[in-house]
Amino acid sequence: MSLITHLFNLLYPPHCPSCGAMVPREGDWCPACLAAIWHPRRIDKPASVTHLCACYCLADYRGAMRRILHDIKYNGREGKCRACRTLLERFPWPERFAQVSLAVPVPLAPEKLQRRGFNQAESLFRDWAESRWTWCDALQRLRPTKVQWQLRRQQRADNVRHAFAVKETVDVRGKHILLVDDIFTTGATLEACASALTQKGAASVTGLVIASGAR
Ligand SMILES: [Zn+2]
Image (cartoon, rainbow, N blue to C red; front, side):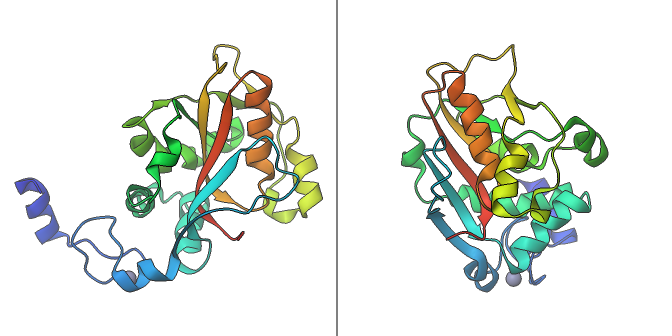
């Protein structure tokens, strides 16, 4: 730890993002709160998800995890991404991404990006991913979609089908891609993105999200 970080920590002691207890480093969780949400796993994909090879998540989408992701997305609290980056650093199976060469975020609709000021997938993953692979904002939204959480499973898939395309300037042929987003619910959004990427020749698309309510 640098002297400046040390002094900063003395003045503003870092707190657990869930319960507020003092922790050694900014972004750290206290052991009890971490245990309550930490659940790294390969998500059981629904049958409708075929282009996404696999999807991994780090935590359960509940309690503090749900509050933090909600605060990032809907209350503009981008600083809370730090609590998620410490989870990323603990990802237990980095060897499963050995073939990956590109990390691609799920894109936001332009009007939403303007309103929020940042894409949470980028804020959550970019620093971590860029130290391993090339970060590539390869996808764009072709049309506005409805808010997914208001829709049922089939409606979600219909809502996002053909909603994404690979940007003209990007070449994904033969690339093994890690597709990143904040949450996995039914997988419809990640699947639509994976479909667009494989149509343009990507060799494989694997997902990684911070949290999921799926098993
Ligand atoms: Zn805590």
